[in-house]
Image (tube, protein in one colour):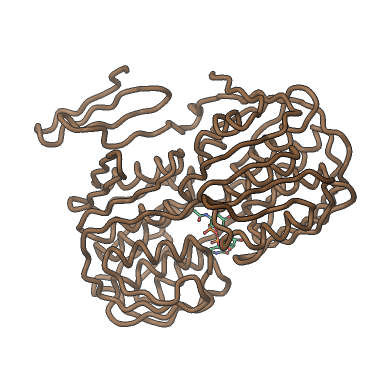
Length: 464
Ligand code: UD1
């Protein structure tokens, strides 16, 4: 472990930065590690690669980790309350570490114990959240509402475009304005203030955005009076945020439906919350079982959060049934092509579109895959074609003609879900596939290579 830096403030707030196993660790003197980051500075990504030899049938059990997309807003929500929030079931992925890094930069103390991660925000301050931080992980914009609610003002950089589309935050801004905030864009920053406090109101979202629903919910908890959110996102992660806020003292009804009611002026209290399991990770391993003609038990996977995914799997000739510990996914017959359209929950998730495209490449017949949530989410297409896939793209629709054998090649990971679709395709490609830029996978998959290896995949991480 190499010491990189230490500060020279008074003893109580003495920190060190050290380098350990590709991580930068922030520690407080005489205490445990406060936080660790995988450095994602421009030009300093850890350039690990994956080597996969295809052809092995996967068999066994995989433990599904906590949901990344549930964890991120909950870490942001810790900023609302002066009392500690303990989160259990946080996945060990870099997006979560970066979000913990963001709240730490605002003065929160993050303590990792064996049972969970305790976030103590009693000493936080509202600082500007920089472009570099938000650009790296768009979900950072979720700190805007809690900081505004707690301090009456907040400045967070606009996220800008990202690999899967323009991804504006207009609905977040409009929701905060409806709740009484003055919000302006100044030099690329969202500058929000509500000196007299936020006021409950009816927030009507123009489409059911997950992030905007979460922003509105967090702001409404601190507003005076009642808030009604209409056309709210119904994703399980939204309902899980409501459960977490409820443990912190909030009064919320209807989360998980189109209409959420929140009684404001929350009296905050110390809280503990166990996050839900990751339905997208579960869906990804379901595809791994299906594509290799194997059988996997997905421990902690929940059928009720995966209905549209199970429907698509069954349409493609894959069997799914519940077990005592989660779900079992199995295939021994041929894979059949199927048409898939991504939609907000409970529709088929956009975060599984790339994985199902890899599956469609191995199915008999044609599959039409339509992306309706993000306008540019087909970066995996040219890379899958490098492995031999037959895909025609027209606007937001991909026509996949399956059945042609895939052959290993060098491919490039471009975003989280695109990258994992390449891993899945590589599991059935003849010969060896090398996947570059594995740091995209580390953002959202905990120990992907290890979990796949334990079920029989021939996969190795080549450390740079
Ligand atoms: C969340 C998920 C992401 C998933 C997405 C859709 C997290 C951390 N991320 O992202 O993995 O792919 O839901 O299920 O939970 N939009 C606007 N204006 C806004 C907000 C969104 O136009 O103010 C648009 C987006 O560009 C997109 C659509 O609405 O086309 C849905 O986005 P949204 O549901 O907000 O996604 P995120 O919350 O960013």
